[in-house]
Image (tube, helix red, strand yellow):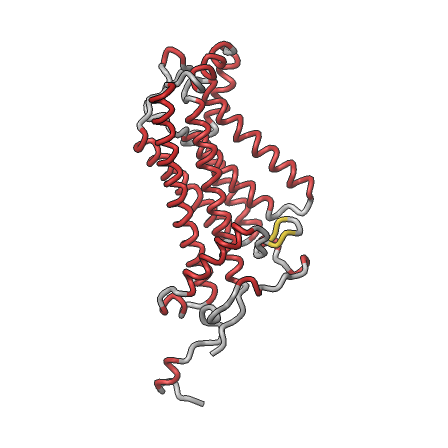
Length: 304
């Protein structure tokens, strides 16, 4: 047995240290459904199994990045490498969504220069104004407040804490926290980048808002928070009907939140569409990061 002070003992890595050299995630065996942890599958679908070509490309790219990470990261072990992959995937996804944000701004500028707001936004706002009434205005305002600076954080906190206590894991807290912070960042960057004016106050329902219009923050944040809550719930529901109902209710809420912003005259329709697309893109990025983390946690132990 080599004494602890011997140089060889300092160089020798433990059996589960880092990823095996040349490990190919395609070699990951498919586990029976009963052996897959409940929070690593949706129904019978194992989240560590990638069935689409784009998904496998993303997975292989991230695995390649962490395999070539500094030795000190690999020395932390497979669990830390999996967490590092989570961070890398989130960062890359965030950069991609930011690029989409900038591209959306360019598209918006092109539309404005060519057609103004007449082609899409003004007809939608005119239709909303035509259907308003004092009672409906008050009810829609109450609903849209749920997606505001107070309502949505409270909703996210309640759902996250309930799931974390149910799972007895930090996974819901981490995923929802990452998703929420990214959503806020995308909203701030998007509004500063585009600086679009909101619809005229003469066509809006009070209380009025003064921040930039593009993208719709209520819509983007609702898409992200509800999207992540839905994903986390799908990991828990074993009933197919429960999953279908959850997705249906979530989609209805997000769509209604966006349309409420147009109805009240607080946003143009294109602001809302951008909020939906950017929010969905960010949710996909966070979910992908979680799946990559799950995949790497199942990597075989590295032998000395």
